[in-house]
Amino acid sequence: MVVHQIKDPETNETLIIDLDIPGQLGWTELIGMARLAKQVPPNGVVVETGSLYGRSSFVWAKNVHPTVTVYCIDPWEREQWIVDIVEKPQKVDRPFSLEAFQYYTYTRDCPNIRTIKGRSPDAVQGTWNQWVDLYFDDADHNEPGLSRNRDFWTRWVKPGGVFCGDEYNSDFPECLRKTYELAMEWGVPVHSAGFFWWMRKPSGPASGQQGRR
Image (cartoon, rainbow, N blue to C red; front, top):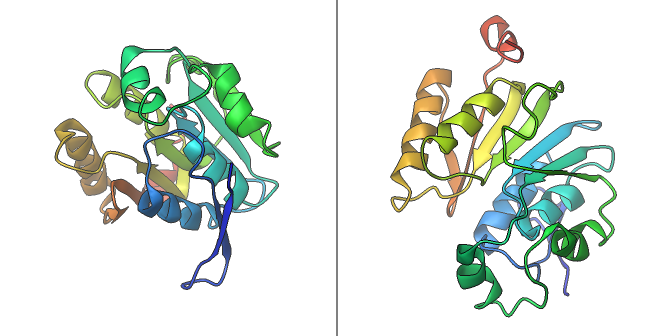
């Protein structure tokens, strides 16, 4: 595997990316993610749902401050779409599983990753108790799972934190609708890099009360 270290011309920071990890996110999206990761404060918390083999997980883990914890939530169940879209075209040498994720990502010098096996939000319902500095949604792209997942994590993103996701394109109209609804609720713009999008939760008394209900 080849790890790319790129000097960001905008910030002069080094961005770390590994495109050899199987996955669907492209270079443009990963660069955007790496830049956002740099903005997570020390001792912060990143949550990713839908980690797959770990291409995006690696970017979060290697570009945040070393004290930041990255929680990766995925059922890690091998389904036919994974075989057809990822395993076969990319000639993946290990069938999809948690062990494959750990082989490609966790064991590759990412001690700040914590894995949670299960479907979000069910896997953490009733047990999650931490504010989140950055949440990345790449789990369910269809209803009702899309809303269940996003509505749960919206409450846990701290004021000033980042809510972001994948599939920012017309092929996933439900994802677009849900993204625009949240942007209108928060009164903030949606930024994008390719199919990757993000917005920042507004600070203030009202938003500060949304974390726990």
